[in-house]
Image 1: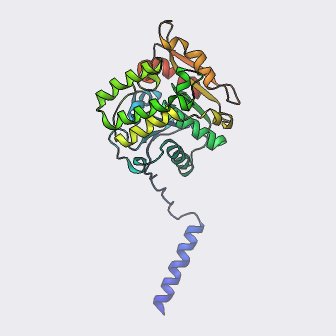
Image 2: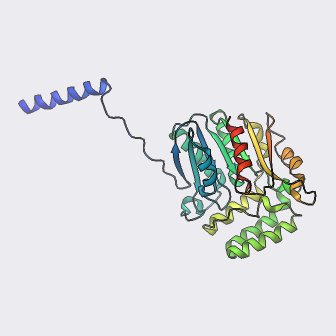
Image 3: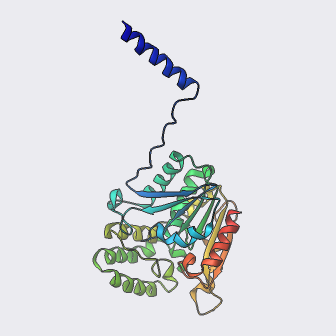
Length: 297
């Protein structure tokens, strides 16, 4: 009987402590995903950084180091790029599933209208994220990314036009070594009429699982997200490399990028970075960081 009274007393005391707010806080479980990894660091307003094709979060290392105090960075990597095991990305479509996992991360981590920056393929993921999550995204920056990459090479291009070349690219990734792939990429760029560095050139190539690389490259070349632009309510900033040299395909970037984002309900802010190619944040880090600070202001 005495033992029962002690147990009952302990239960009542524990309940009283809980009601008084003295119970230990429940720890938030680490985010787990078989599609992406996310490293969070710092404190302050949330900024999500999404890398491009064949790159990991390491591509943002210089940007992250220079952003300084006062922000909480969420550095995303896609499984199957770099040294990360492929996980669920080893089969089937990738980008839509990655965007869905980022939506889940934002919800589970309690992010309040984060800013999102995506490079290349990561920019397309950011477009999906902003279109699907709508008012849960504070603002979006795409870096040398288009809702339909072939339109940067030929504005009238269709998925059907690029499909045969995308199939060749898929096979090249599967069967060629890294150097062979880069050589084949340059050749395919010439077949596309130039300006193909947005897909093939200086991609910050970190390699990875060839199944994931092949599928992701195929999607980058063939997925057309222009019809999703009207769903985006967040303000959008479009950053891209530009050249004053009329012999460079980059000299035509202004009109090409403006045309690519014409379907946004709110006109985008366009930031051209002179002297940069596809890896804008690496090619011109100071100018890129200035654009990021304007974006976040």
